[in-house]
Length: 189
Image (cartoon, rainbow, N blue to C red; front, side, top):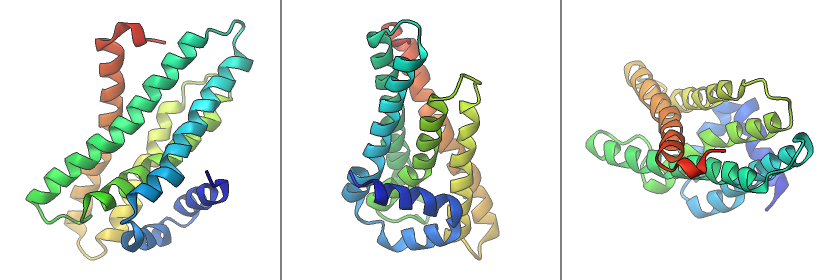
């Protein structure tokens, strides 16, 4: 895991999103490198932060409960990444696919989730204010900047794709979490 690569990735997507998305359009064929260097380490850092916040923040440490929480979060984001990516690939095949191959779609969806995961990492060390759900706004912000970059001259397509992508990128992980917690009652943390 290269922390510098991860830091530059997150800094680029938040500080200069237009430049970031334009650069990502052409070099996003390497999905394995993206998953290995950016996405999976981000989920790992988030998982460690959940464990550390439970270790130092709880009166009594229930390791089983913490591990269930980590497992549900990993299933939510990894499942969301692949479910949304394959859905976009399937829907994109019906229309003019703006993203291209599945590799590009995986990198796009993962790039939208990484800043939120880092925000959740920071929030896990803070007292519970229940503001974590507001971090979904980072996903919507990233989708908007990606749509501006991909559809510079097509305003109607930009708005339609933005609305659909935002809904898909936010709803799918929330639904996966809901399904996991309600179908498998032993997974509640």
